[in-house]
Length: 241
Image (cartoon, rainbow, N blue to C red; front, side):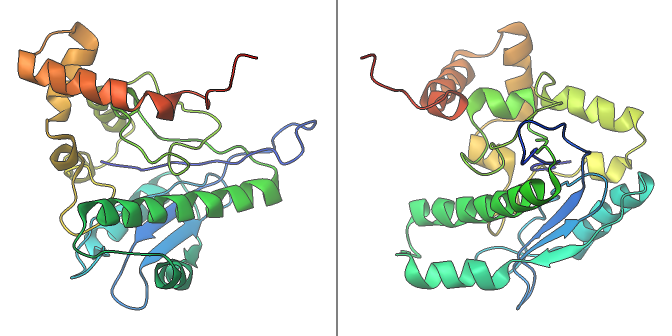
C-alpha cells in the first residue's frame, strides 16, 4: 500500500491552534480528460496516488480508486474530487519537455506530486489545518519522495516506521490485505513502482535500516542514496557569515 502523502493541514494563522485534520484522495492521471485528481474530505486530507495505466505519461486505475474509496469508507471519511488535469496540461505546454529523456519523465512525475501538494496547502491555509505526511522511515532515509511535493509536510506520524512496520500497522487497523499486498507505486508514469526506481526491495532496505546488515552491493547502493538525498532532509544551507 503506497499512500503518497496522507495530508492534513497547515495553520494559516501561526498564532492560533490548528483546527483539525482533513482527508484527500488523490488520483493520478485517468483516461482523458482526467489526468490528475484529488479528493478532499472534511476530516483528513489524504492522497492516494494510483498506478499508471494510461498509454502516455500516467494512468488511472479503477481498482486503485476502489481501494482508496474503501479505505475512506472504512474510516468514515467523506471525499470530494478536485481535478488538476487542465493545470498539469497547461504547464507542460509552456515548459520544455523532451519526451525521450528519462530526466524529463522524472520532472513530469515530480510536477504531479508538487501540484498535489500546492492544492493541499491551499486548503490547509484556507481551513487553518496542518499538512500531515504519510512518508515512512524507509522512504525518508533514502530520499524517496519529491522535494516540495509529498515531502513538504508539517508532521510525519509514520516517520519512525519502516515499510514493513507500516504494513503491520495497516493489518492492525483492518486495511484489506489486497491493498497491503499491492506493489507500492506513486503512480507517476506507466509501469512505475517504488522498488523498480529504488533498484532494491523494501525488505532489503528495511533490513539494512534496522540491523545495518546487507550484502556489500546493497549497502553501497543504500548509502549512496542516503548521501545524494541529504539536501531533501535538511534546510537549505546558508553562508556562515
